[in-house]
Length: 301
Image 1 (cartoon, rainbow, N blue to C red):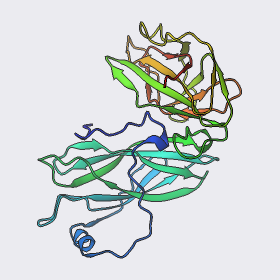
Image 2 (image 1 turned 90 degrees about the vertical axis):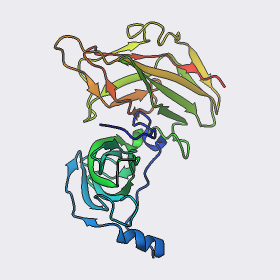
Image 3 (image 1 turned 180 degrees about the horizontal axis):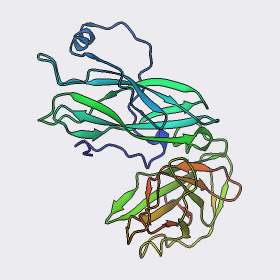
Image 4 (image 1 turned 45 degrees about the horizontal axis):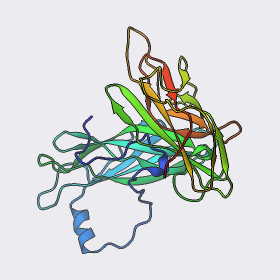
């Protein structure tokens, strides 16, 4: 799948830290002349009905090539999320947007902050792929990827400090020549010192949030690549406002006929007794079955 020419944030970040395409609600306000003209240039499309991992497209508007006299078509996509879980989950949905030239683009992930267990939440977004010189509007939209995290395990990169007193987030990651590295940051946003000692506990999970089988979680990155994850474990005390960093390291190497170990999630516990946080590093471990975890190290200011 081809990506837009303008760089977009990736899903390895935590949910609320992404640049989002804002959900449009169901209420409508009076429209002016410009909006009326825009409406004339759009044609309502029938519900597509496509479903994937609890997400279903319920309707579209503005699909197809541009109408003569109108600017490039912009599609509005209505969709719903139904959670089969018992507890509330936060969702991000990534769409595949196809322009009139037949080129497909991955949309910025759309966040649905909380879906109660067994409930359905309806929302919409505007599909806006980068418009190339050979494209003319949005011709089609499909569900590309769905990710979900228990609301109680969100990393909370913004907003009020969690009850735990710390925020745990992951960066966008770095990939080169099959080597992967995703940084993990823990910030003490509370009012008391926060102690760390050694390595975070990490459990890789599959798309159904079940532990990945056949994966070894290693302390340090020596078995992944020379020079990675070499920080020696030590006791740390983070004052309010201070932060510590770790990292997840692996190789996307395929050897022989072994089964690839892939899973989007990890459940991370910063120290014994700490509340778990679910991150989305999009693990593609190949057939190596190895995931390296670096020791906590105080962030330099």
